[in-house]
Amino acid sequence: MINIKNKFSPLTLFLLKAGGVYAVWQLIYDLVVLPDGRLDTWLSFTGVKLAAAGLTFLGWEIETADRFIACVGNRGVEIQNGCNGMDLLGLYAGFIIAYSGDMKKRVMFIIGGIGLIFTANVFRIAFFALSNLYFPQYWDPVHYYSSYVFFYPIVLTLWYLWTTMNDHSDIFSGGSFSSA
Image (cartoon, rainbow, N blue to C red; front, side):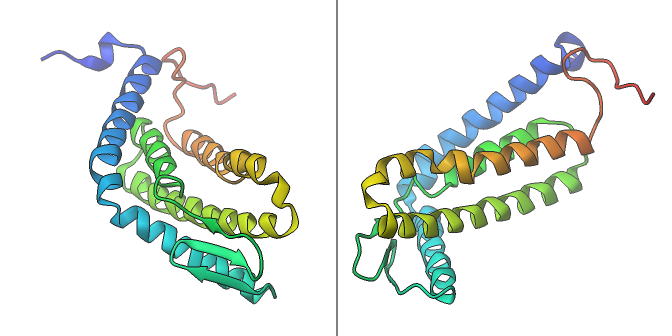
């Protein structure tokens, strides 16, 4: 039997696993999840409902209809399938799956991270409704850069935490970190 760990460097092995997991996720998402639409629709509807509840609690008058949210009397925002953070969930989980670590800890970290990313999406949806109220002329840049503000810092921080709390071997050299 060929030991694949001896054939490739730890970095190459990680990149192969991460690429494979991401490719499988994209195929499943593009060919099954997105066309079916139920999970994406649930994420969009639930995100809108939670964003509306939060904004209403904070004193804004909000209108919603399924996947639409608006401050009363203003332009609304539609949270479409494929634009609700679902694809990022697979990317996040793929990294955690590809990097070494305890399986029970990995499952808990994936579930917790998905919950945190979903919560960030609720804040993002609320931000969209407010940006249409206060800065409607800036919709395009607000929408374009929102992922950089709401999702990527969280995902990168979680990835960093996962790598630091697990197997402390150096994936660049295959060696170990010094404890000194």
